[in-house]
Length: 210
Image (cartoon, rainbow, N blue to C red; front, top):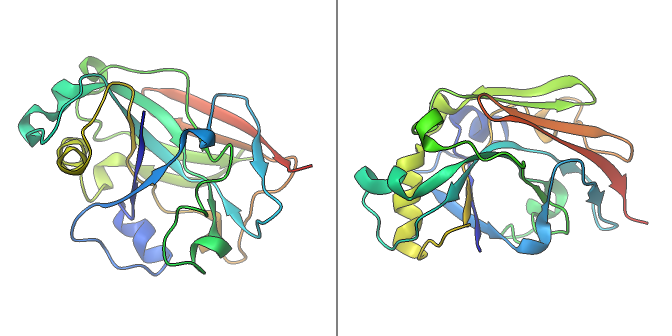
């Protein structure tokens, strides 16, 4: 399976980190080594300076396809999950691409509940929240996404043949720790929660690599 991620898909998030708004979806990938489930630890690697969590709506593909029409896209979606796209920001912004910064082990927690399209439709209008040790950092809504779920599924399928079980992380709203003054980085002992309206809460503790 593939983990396809979308960068800068909320206008306010792009603005807070000083990046231009994309004119087409900015896709990147994570590998399966990044996947962990609820309550499994996020491990801060030895190489990391600043690690950010990013609350995201995750789309799970149920029916595969290539060059899927936007009008048919929801028919290929099994449902929606909560997800967390972890990033080592100092590495991300010192390198020309994001694979290493976002590819460390445990850097893609995904929730255990998959809520079907029949309940959540196209995934728009859902509140997306990140809490760090109980305090709200991110608080956004999927209505603010630059590119909506059907468009993302269709667009990704033009490049990758989508297969059942593939995941598409749809981007993160504003409020990330890197953009704050002072910056807020994950540290050993923290607890991160990602909540997406209608889906539930994904909770993960944070530990430092031994």
